[in-house]
Amino acid sequence: MRKKLISDPRLINVNDLGAGSKRVKTNQRKVSDITRNSAVPRKYGIFLANMSKEFGNPFVLEFGTSLGISTMYLAALCPGSIVISLDGCRETSEIASVNFKEAGLTNIRLRNGSFDDLLPGIRNEKICPGLVFIDGDHRKEAVIRYFDQVAEMSDNNTVVIIDDINLSHEMSEAWSEIKNHRDVTLSVDIFRMGVVFFREGLNHFNYVVRY
Image (cartoon, rainbow, N blue to C red; front, side, top):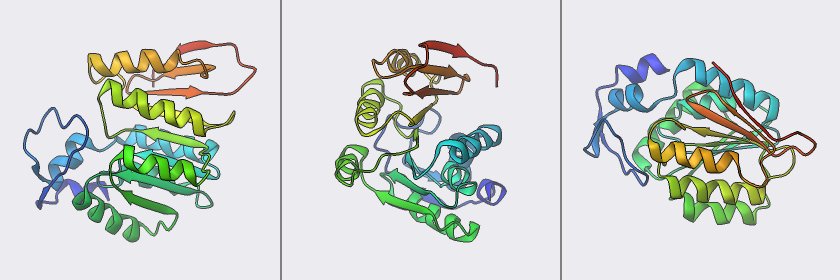
């Protein structure tokens, strides 16, 4: 699927509700360029798949679908769980929906809109995610706001993964605040991503692991 998207020459209009791309300044972008610049690398995709298999029951919540590559990794190894993926761009979401169908993945529920507009509805549904993947917006204030809301709807077993924690000084600051959040009992920094646990009984420690 990734190889197919890397060679896709189509131009689409991207409605980016987050901080925007650092590499591409126009909203009109090639599908191939989005794949190269924004899609999660394979080794981190495998990491997401394994984390979803271990912790993603009964729900996985993803912030930022884009073309659906990370979403497919999250859904592939846990067919019995529902992956709820949020995204603000209808054009990329339409491509993602086709990718899900071609991959035979039926456990993905894609919702369009801003994260701030969609989250209250998810909370009203009393959804408690086993795994959360926060991507799609790389502004410090926004990331911390989403994390705080996720923490309120999570339980002792929920695991949260933050993408691009070293992308910018702003994201590094956001990660520093998140890993020291009052409800976080353990954090793991694997350079591109940060993982936090709410599990009681753990001695609070911040690990850095080469991945």
